[in-house]
Length: 125
Image (cartoon, rainbow, N blue to C red; front, side):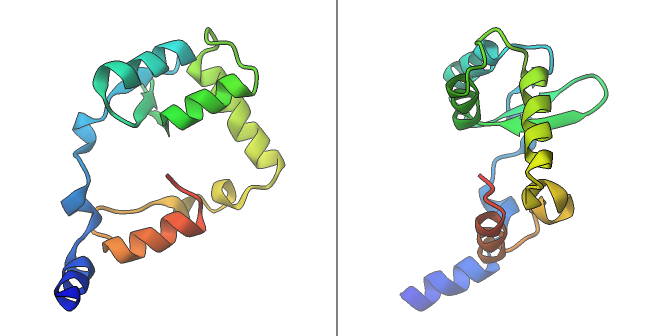
C-alpha cells in the first residue's frame, strides 16, 4: 500500500491539488491591513493576492498580516506601505528568497515532491 501512495505522489502535480487562482480573494494595494484581515475572515481562505490595476504585487497570508501588526504597523496602514517596507528590509538583509526570485516559483506542472523541496529551501508558505 505504501508503494502505491509513493507512486501516486510522484505522479501528482501541484496543479492537481491546488485551488484555482481565480478562487483566491484579492485586495488592492490601497487597502488597509485591517481590510486584508477581514478578507481572511469572510472568505475562509488562507491567502489574499495584492494587486492594483497594473500588476500583482504579492500574496499575503494571515500570518503575514499578524506579523505586520506585531512589528507595530497600525491596522490602518495600507498593504502597499507594509509590502514596500517588507521588501526593502529583505533586500537590505540580502535575503536569498528575494535575490533569487526565479527560484521561488512553483509551477502547476511541478511534481509535489519537488514543490516540497523548493518551498522548504526558500521558506515559502
